[in-house]
Image 1 (cartoon, one colour):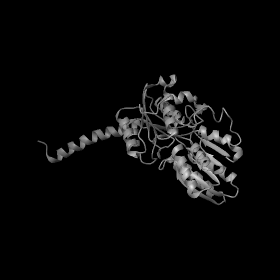
Image 2 (cartoon, helix red, strand yellow):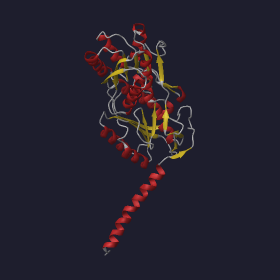
Image 3 (cartoon, one colour):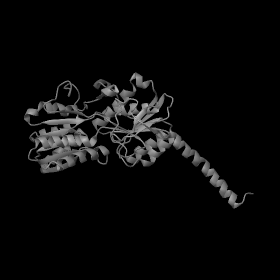
Image 4 (tube, one colour):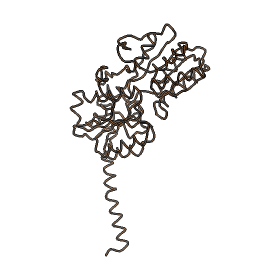
Length: 379
């Protein structure tokens, strides 16, 4: 019979073996940090000059890829899910996939983390995520890395260098919109700022860009903030309430739901004013139609097709290509008086359709019919 000392030694050995295996597995699974440029340098531009480049061990396909979305209750997110489904059905992409799974968990951060954990446990090769919170995902990021799962965050990205982030310069969008107001409000004035979904990195970054630009302009701006959740209906009601309580305003900036914001102004017979906003088709229609009435707009953003770039990046990583740890997407921008029918807005398409769903450098381009023919439901 073993004595107490030998029992303890046996327990230590039993623990040490799987621990060593886990540590070795983690080291094996982690991507190598290599020199750039990216294998597909035209599509996958690094975020900054000091951005690291990753190379994962090449894995044989076809692949199982999951998309763990959070918030779904606005047109941008719905179109994003539809775009993801349209992209993976394209023949050259479909040939590389064994399975594509979509789950939307709402604003519940633990539910989104749980979904990612479930995908890791189920053995998916890569997980694409639009994160509800940039800092809450530390443990699941570590699990993905140890399991050799490629994790790609886009739009609302993750505050980590252990996953791949794909995004437009969200703070830079706030700067663009605020610069437009500074330019067209020579004496400063009252600004209505319609924000997005609280707690997300996109909302925070865009707000910071607006706030810092207005504050640094040398002009006096008084800002009323309301929450529009990037949704026409929510933003319309929030704008109507703000006009009734704090209006009128001398300028407006909105992160999304902009068609609803303008509609609220029209319903309240609020004068048209300079507006820095997103890329909804309906918003751009109104900007073109009412420019002479004072609705002078800058429309900037990046369409929901950025999800396709995220999926493309995940596949490239699985194939052993060199990819940036942080990929910077181009910003779609058009401003008064340059709104062109059939190019910058489409009179025959839905107001809720976001314009700018092509990334030519990535070979990504969608028709409205391709996108709108997909469902928003989990699959």
